[in-house]
Length: 100
Image 1 (cartoon, rainbow, N blue to C red):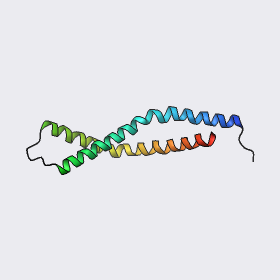
Image 2 (cartoon, helix red, strand yellow):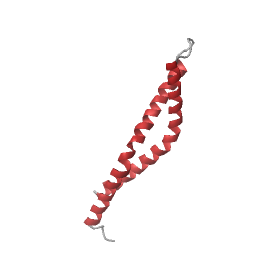
Image 3 (spheres, one colour):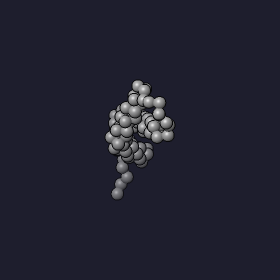
Image 4 (cartoon, rainbow, N blue to C red):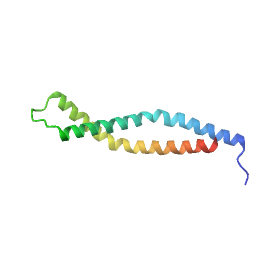
């Protein structure tokens, strides 16, 4: 079996690079959003779990609880997107390494 020609390898590499630029780079916002939601959820969870709030609930505390609840809802929603993007990025990077 013959090895792929040089022009075929260049075409394959160019296609993989274009796919990376058009698909993966714009979706990096999902990564940032997922990490921010995870961090906000963990900070809020530990703060609500370990600190004592017997003085009452203020508006600021209510806003914090609402933000933690929203972050808690976003984490399971975004995890599928995060894993899919990560696996796709790894596959594109491996095809880039093979062709170059």
